[in-house]
Length: 587
Image (cartoon, rainbow, N blue to C red; front, side, top):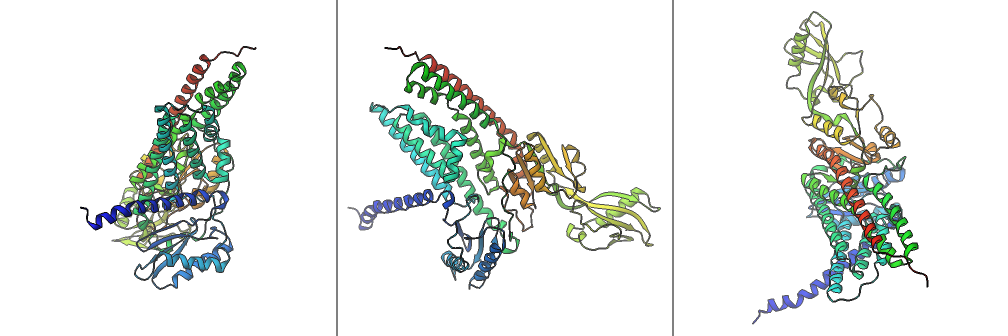
């Protein structure tokens, strides 16, 4: 006889399942309803006394933004239990660290809502151009919805085939297939619904029509692709959970304002997949039209069109990007925009801010003697003064002495620090006070600096480096060396106008990282500043950036092979369709 508790659990289990299903369906409905320019759902992430709350009206720039940011920060800092609060203008969020014994996330949200109402921004929509943060739950909800539709469709299609239920015409697949592969149609849907919502709508529609037309194989392939996407999304969420505490230590290192988004000056150049889709789609439509005129059979023309659809090209790139995103996240890379990896095969120019190639240790770059001291002796004397000194110490006013030798800043040269592109210039004085040499002090190169430059050189057609005194030995590897003080955002836009997809690696320039097609920021150990406008947050160190650069050639290779496979399949499908046709005979 079952115990009472067991019986009660068995009775209540279905009700709990139904309740959970209702909540899940409600979540899906909310995500699907919150589309396009109507996005009003607030993105919130909370964990152990930390909350990231999106705020209505935080545009990142302008007087209204600054007034609202001050009001939100002041209101939260006055709440008992709040340790600190700061606005991240790049993400449109306020970050709050609080004592869980005194208040919870719902209390923080109430304060934010009161400030929004007082500032008159509570009815504003959130910017649709803002990418989904790594902690967002909507991408997982949408991908899981599409996967569930694929699985149900696969079961339905299999049952129809086993039970010998007549299948509907394959022509039903044409609208959804064309919406999936045609950039213009897909772009129209994405502009109305949003990228993720449009992808889910197409996926669910595909599942329905393939279930009705016995499309088991396409449904199985779609399901595998959705599982890869879910693994990638889960990886993004996990790496955010693990790295958020080190990326955000307090509110002082957060960007107070961001640069307004600027449209790309020219369209992104086509990659192997886009070229394949354009060529094959036109041939498919022409061939299907010719077949229809020849046979006067719409059913046969529809089958020929479906047989030549270049779907494999895009699926190959998507599978590679999803798998790469999962691997990078496991390695510690935080993807602020998960869609950015889909552009790797279209990157043809790599721009590296040379400051990221420098390590945090001083290095003697050059010695020019001006007195009686020989060059070797001057070099040894200067090195003895620099021994065991840090960049922070050498960034001060000086002078720096050791034994009989003294280094001091000259008065005839603008002041600089060793980590700057100009490097530090100092005069070496002897015990008698006479100037013996003029030296330049820069930074040691990161141990992976050579590997990063070599990977960029082999993975892109054009490598551009910014000028920097500490990187002169690797500058000859670049196709272009930018003069000092050159604007990085302007350089990004110039390369885009020249027809390049641009990948930028920088640790400081938020505007340039936001303008690049793929922005990769490299964090520095011990530094609080993070460029939140980047697509990928890497570091500390250059290992992650090197792995992203190494993936450039792999991404192009996968896309090229997928495009060739797709074109070969389309050609074979066209031959099979043509071989099984005959012209209609007039009455």
